[in-house]
Image 1 (tube, rainbow, N blue to C red):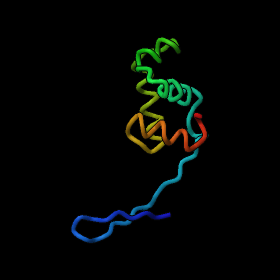
Image 2: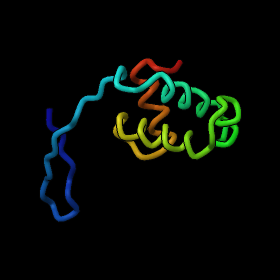
Image 3: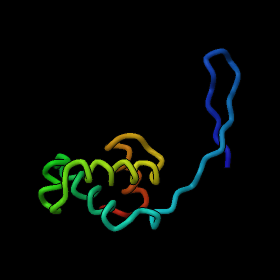
Image 4: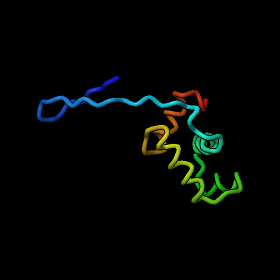
Length: 86
C-alpha cells in the first residue's frame, strides 16, 4: 500500500506504508503502555511493576518501534487502534 504526501514545491512524494501486527508487542510492553494511559510516569510504572524507570523507558522504546511511532500519545492511539487497550 502506498500513501502520498504533498511537497511544498508542488510535487508529490509517495512512500510505502508498513502494516503492524499488535501481536508483535510483548506482554510487558502492552502492560507498560496500559499504565502509560493512566498518566503514570516511568518511575511510577517501574515502582508498580518492580522494575527500574530506565527499563520502563526501554520497553517503551521497543514498543514505539513496533507501533511505528515516536511518542506516548501516538503509541496509545496505535495500541487502541490495534485493540490492545480499551
